Each structure stands twice: as structure tokens, then as C-alpha cells.
Picture 1 (cartoon, rainbow, N blue to C red):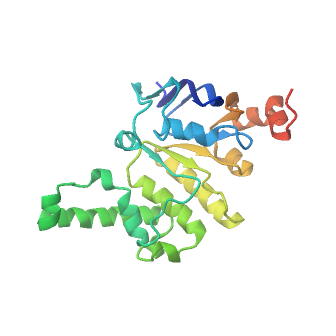
Picture 2 (cartoon, rainbow, N blue to C red):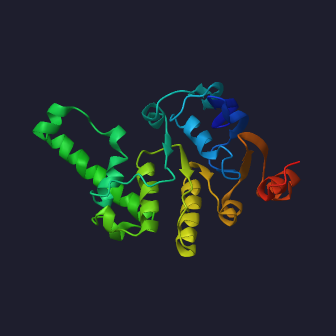
Picture 3 (spheres, rainbow, N blue to C red):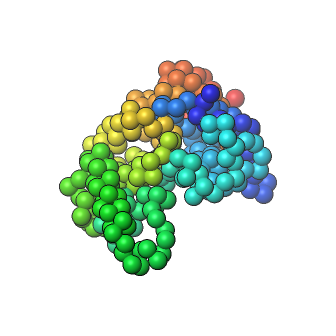
Length: 253
């Protein structure tokens, strides 16, 4: 059974059909990329699967369980994490505090205990800080642990956002343009990090415009065009598909 099954997924905004009857399946432990020209519906598809939007119709299943229309926090508890095109970093917090925020679903929310600072809660805080530091090592940012986020380079903030998503201990992580705005060196760092995440057993679903990165990383690729599924396959299959070539060149038949 696939980890994620999407069947005939659609959403309409008034008369605009942003995603139309899109179906695909994603196996566990792979890098699955979603590509297409600007306006193809890639981020909208992410928003549907991760609970930002509710589908007009269609079905989304995670390990056979229907998750369509569930809220982002409900999905997070089921192991679905997400980053966004635009940074969602708390700039007035330290880097390690940002990562610890990602573990909020696993924190004890009992306000009385928090107010009294029970010893068990203090121990848990220390454990969470150590977990966060280990994640910062994993993404190559341990030297920034106590730095304020607003003092960090943009490329480092992109990796910090991935670390925060990983703090949720996800089964599948959706990365929306993680290399956007990065220089070549930073792009290579993110490329290596995405493969490292997948090699750790976490399924990665990627939207990215850097085709070199997509072809280097992806086990499977879904191509969207005007909200519809154009094709799906390996990098080589997608690269040779005449419909994909036409869509990217703007020569629609």
C-alpha cells in the first residue's frame, strides 16, 4: 500500500478550476517532486493535501485513512509536516527556539504544570532543546544554535525551516520551493539535505523550479499544467515526454 493516495482531487475558486481531477500515489521513503509552469497548481495541490484548503471533491488517504479536509494541526499529529515558499520563521527568536516550536504538538500543554515549573516539565524542556540541537546538526546549522534568526543568512533560514518541520517527527514532509532565492552553493546544500532527509526514512514531497535539483533528487515526478495532471514518471520519462516539453515551451497542442 502506498503511503499517500490522492484520487480525483479538485478545488474550484469561483469559476477558476485551480486543480482538476488529479490522482497519484506516493510510496514511503522516496523523493516525489511536483513540477509545472507558473500557475500550474503546484502550491494549491500542496495546500489541499496539507489542510490549508478543503477540496471541492476528491479523496486524500494517508496509509489508507482519509485525511481530506482535516486541519493542519490534525495532519501534523498524523505525521504530515510542511514548509512554505515564503519563510515562516520567528525572527525575534533564536534559531534553536524556532526548531523547538516545531515540537509543540509533543509538549505537555498543562498550564498549571507550566506555571509551577514542575521538575518533569523542566526535564522535558531540556530534552526538547537537545533534540532541537541534534536537528540543527543534521541540517548543518549547529553553529547558529543560539543566534537570533534575524541575524542568520537567508540560505541558513531555509534549512532552519526544514529543521523545524523535522522537529514534528513527520512521516512525510512537503517542501515548497526550498531552493527559491538561493545561490548555487546554498542550492547544493539544500539538495544534499533533501536526500539526507529521504535517506533517514522520511518521505519527501517537493515543489521546486530548479530542474537540475529536481532531476538529481526525484524518484518520481508529477507534472501539472493548468491544474491538470500532464504526466507522471521517472526523471528520464518526464524529460523525454513531448507534452512536458510543449508545456514548458508554451507550445500547447
